[in-house]
Amino acid sequence: SQQGEEDPQALSIQEGENATMNCSYKTSINNLQWYRQNSGRGLVHLILIRSNEREKHSGRLRVTLDTSKKSSSLLITASRAADTASYFCATDYGGANSKLTFGKGITLSVRP
Amino acid sequence: NAGVTQTPKFQVLKTGQSMTLQCAQDMNHEYMSWYRQDPGMGLRLIHYSVGAGITDQGEVPNGYNVSRSTTEDFPLRLLSAAPSQTSVYFCASSLSGGALTQYFGPGTRLLVL
Figure 1 (cartoon, rainbow over the protein chains, first blue to last red):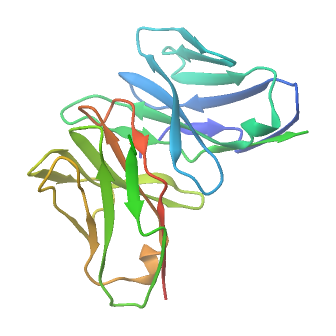
Figure 2 (figure 1 turned 60 degrees about the vertical axis):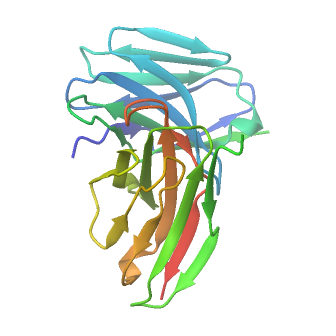
């Protein structure tokens, strides 16, 4: 399977702390995306980073991509209780009719 | 815009029964897809469509049929439900391709007894 692998599987932090989540993948990609899923809801797109980009920001989110290590990280700064959710990385390996391959997700709990 | 809508929200079936999960989007997206989400497995692609009249299989297509007669609608049919199809099903759409930002529906929780 070419599924990306997130690490850790679960993360519990205190409100105000930073949360760092990692994703590793196996082969070259066109882009990598991060999604959030609140309990019982559909996934919501957070950020997309292309293979020729190294870092992107969106509000309190910072995503980095290291293509030499085939890995990405998602940093949430100054976390809030509302950030409690599952986070998924999704990779596009390119090719005809390219599609996203989702990882198994990271469960983030932010304690108030 | 309502975005991506799915019906029903929850369904219980008996083994062997058939049903159709409905998905609609009002964003004029060309690409639509169906995923299933199981504990510890992440999201797995069942079927997808790159436009009206065109469908293709994803990673786990067995036991499911799809059709795409309009841009807006992409129903998923279970012909003869099995307990292994107990899952949460998500429909998603994107402007023009599976590798672009996906917009997800709220999901349908299916229990097959």
